[in-house]
Image (cartoon, rainbow, N blue to C red; front, side, top):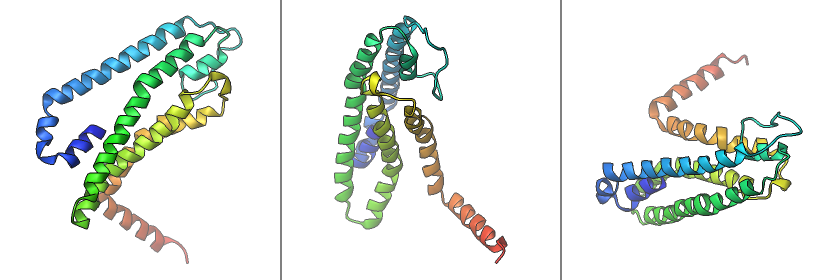
Length: 196
């Protein structure tokens, strides 16, 4: 998404060259391959864990960190995998997204008309909000020792598991003029029907 926004705003005349079918297929295959290899490493190491105390996970979903917290095995390999994966995949992805938004914002600020700047900013704000919420919760949660984690972290992970997938469609829906008009009618009707 960040690359798509970068090309659309910084190189609009070359958009169809940079975002050709070939490029989008390469991006999709690379994303799926990285995700599959990442999850395969976790699956192998987690299958070696033993659980002596309890089989109940105090979390919303079966995630690696809550499993490590209830395991009585040595979790060193999984923790190292988490740090390596975060260092090789997550942090560079965040930095590339951040750098692309620096270029995007600098290009937007060069737009002469205020209407053009407003339109360009509005196309990026929802994605940038999702990126900030996602990486702002993901990196601090996973890039620290398991011993420093507590069951309260499940509420922190709720932000990137539930809020991020909901946030983007909600923002795009609220940009739709028909939805805005329907919401205004609903609010006016509720105000009208409220006893005074």
